[in-house]
Amino acid sequence: MGPFMSPFNNLLCMLLGISFTVWFTLLLVFIIVPAIFGLSFGIRGLYMKTLLKVFKWATVRMERGAKEKNHLLYKPYSLNGIIAKEPTSLEEELKEIRRNGSSRDLDEFEVSDTFYFCRRGIESIVDDEVTKRFTAEELESWNLLTRSNYNFQHISTRLTVLWGLGVVIRYGFLLPLRLTLAITGVSLLVVFTTMIGFLPNGRVKHFLSEKVHLMCYRICVRALTAIITYHHSENKPKNGGICVANHTSPIDIIILASDGCYAMVGQIHGGLMGLIQKSMVKACPHIWFERSEGKDRHLVAKRLNDHVKDKRKLPILIFPEGTCINNTSVMMFKKGSFEIASTVYPVAIKYDPRFGEAFWNSSKFGMVNYLLRMMSSWAIVCSVWYLPPMSRQEGEDAVQFANRVKAAIARQGGLVDLLWDGGLKRGKVKDTFKEEQQKLYSKILVGTSVSSWDPAVHL
Image (cartoon, rainbow, N blue to C red):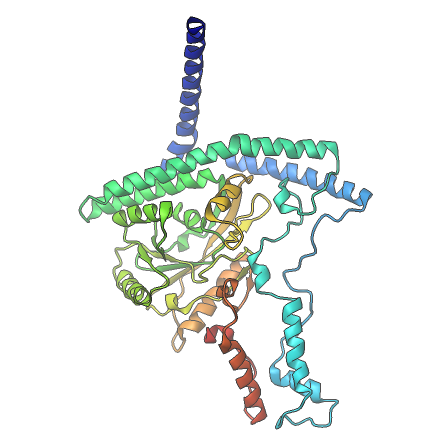
């Protein structure tokens, strides 16, 4: 039986060798080499336009079928809330409540005052504008992913066949291709940055480090089939500055770093991520720290100050929110990044959820699960706006400066500007919130007028 199997084995090995050679050649010619030189053949743009036409047809067909069968397609969802509220102060609210009571003066306690706090508490439970920023939004149209329409039901045979074909394409072709590119990009990054780390500090090391980082990040961008539109490139961060951006996903770093090199600031990780961090810091002055150690925080502040004073060093990339928000809002910026006397370069990032959900819900999905979901999506489409540089104005403290920068980013990206701390994603509301409301009420009773309260100041 051996002599008969030998030709078959040889033929099988030859076919596998040819397939591997063709596969690697296509990757090298159409993806890796263009990534090195920053070129594009326009294939991803054509791919995006084709997807939009397919999504449009599928959505129309689905809505027509759902209407005939009286099915609910989408969850009711509102970014602006379901309770209409006017921006009024605590003092005005209390006056309104007491208007029909026996006492209209705000100089003593009234039992009716408790109605205000009860109503605000119930409103916060019914229409919570914080926690809904940590879940993926429901799309207004279907993108042939069951994860984007939780009320998915059989509508028609043609639509089901199209969905099945999409599953085969995404998991049978796109996912293996993207995994190959991701492994290639990460491997090259680890190997080359480790090698560059042995070179003496100087222009040659700096030049090679920039080229290697750009090449590897661009390969990783193609591993996600990321289609990125950069606006106002003349405002790109300069050396010695601080780049701040809203944070939706861990891939925000790749999105920005594929268009320019940055010095990263982030928490120390273990495993594969830790290996990548150790290799990267050998070639470029990134700043890694342990979030739980107070000494590290003071050391980071000192290193940031030293870094921005050297105009030869790369701009520092920081995400002041400190956590991922679901691409609908910008939450409170931590003031630490704005206490450093340096120019700040704001950047707004906005993802198009029609092609794939970029938001990382870390409380629901681990990193590996999240990356697999990203790589099995259709594409990652986003826009990046480089805003004009901003500096602290005279008499402006770090909190006010952070809020001004945050407002500019939210305005440019079409995002909701929220004052709340993204740390509420994992922790409980701080006692200072409750204490501040008590102080405001006490000041009103003793005759001190207070018109507003900014939670960012007390975090």
